[in-house]
Image (cartoon, rainbow, N blue to C red; front, side, top):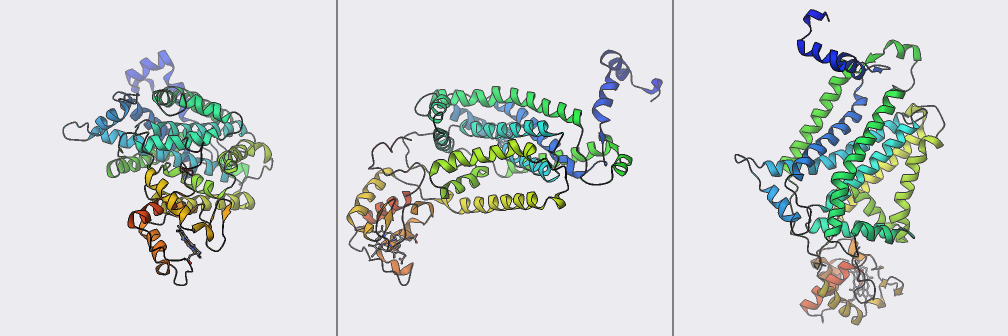
Length: 463
Ligand code: HEC
């Protein structure tokens, strides 16, 4: 550009902060092989993170992080309107759906880097910082889940922190440290609020910065395969085509989040009630697959502690263990097939979770305890197994509550099992009164469900 044509502002800033050199450093990043749609994921994650920062700050203006105020303040936000526009609910919706979409985008970004083999030498450290950012995203989602202080938040966090408590040796200490005591209370909420709004944002700025600095040091991995000379000749700068693609990608992310925020507002359940033992805790949908998997892995500790540890180890050691410089997914059939298998399993497990335990019947602790008495006096154990006792003629009922049979189906099974199974040998328990049948169904529905230990066994009642 000729100096006369430059705006005065540009000239002023260039003289004082060397604006042109800065812009050229930011925009003229060489992209081997040219701009591509495949590269938009990083920018989309970055955009969703910035959106979380902005909407989070707005929410913090109104949020009160104590058990007496948290629920009321979120409820207030939900009803906050400006010129009849429900701005409060919209901002909260953006933050809520922004979190879900960010988890998906981080997953897609990781998947793309993996399939492209872009984690390989010399990008191992950049990958490690990325894994750390993934973990931070999960912690952000987990700590944010508690903040509305409704039933969903409270019981979800009870289950989540109980899982942390299962880690050998250090688990119980970590659990009571983050809870700030035995149960969930004011300290838990202020711990989570501080982690969510002060610790994590600071770490995010630091580590996203580090991720970007390393990125500019080693440069983009570029397309796999291809002759280095042709790639060199196809070299393009970040500006303008990649900037345009990234911007369109980010705009698409915003449209999606905004649409979800308006069409499916997050909602607020009743205020957390620690004595409501009938609540059926469910995790956020992106943890569904883990919870479903945990139901089949026994002993429990293997799934709850072993599985995440295994996933973490694989992610951390991947770039060091995989020394093969080959990057093309076509020539890495094992990696690609393993990825497809993991993805397919995650989808199937999530569907099972949504159709299974997420639809479970709400339980009433007293009815359940009465139902247990009926169960013990009706000879059910003659044919059914429960944990390590009972007969083998009928199916094992230890995890019957996880199947999600509706109450009426169970009552039918008790009084007229041939309706459900034409050749059923199970007797008709017609001598049981309607309320006994109800209680028995409640008890059977509780079997194997997290947070529903045998009410008569001592020591299990602790949540
Ligand atoms: C004579 C043996 C016998 C007795 C006693 C018995 N059951 Fe069953 N039960 C079965 C058999 C066999 C099945 C397999 C399905 C069928 O044929 O009805 C079954 C199925 C069930 C199922 C459905 C399992 C499923 O998800 O498909 C439930 C629930 C159940 N029984 C509960 C009870 C309860 C509660 C009692 C005690 C009140 C009881 N059963 C007593 C034999 C028995």
